[in-house]
Image (tube, rainbow, N blue to C red; front, top):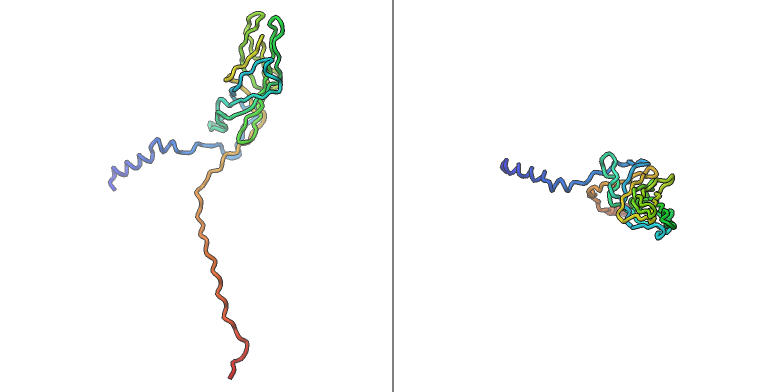
Length: 201
């Protein structure tokens, strides 16, 4: 084979298509996400004060991947759950409504990564003075939103933190199956019968 042909083969082996097929790096075995790691979440259901009931769960989704040393530990799009802690409508004369939300967990390979300290900035209308309402972080994992009618729109981005260290269990690398040679069992030939009697004359 000529030298130009060998050069073409080398270029083909290093083509972008071949690079794209390389497996993505995974965190080292035993790696863990530290407690209080910031996470960005997307609220996937509209929530309205008074209409939404306390104890009601709502879907969350990880808006950005969680990284460890530049490597994706948990990908964006991972689903999770939040909970409505308290919900009250506004009173007369445009008094503030109340909506307290909490991020509970992300579902990671059938395990729960618990969350805390969710907060967002949510605008609303106060009928009394037209002021803009903002989210105020409370002392427990949740959010207090004031306004004549407090609404959190679907797709709202919130921030939270991991509540505890979370050990990762990356999928093991699948190696090529090894071919074992099984030797057939060979039955031992019966030993010749040995007579203990003397020869007859």
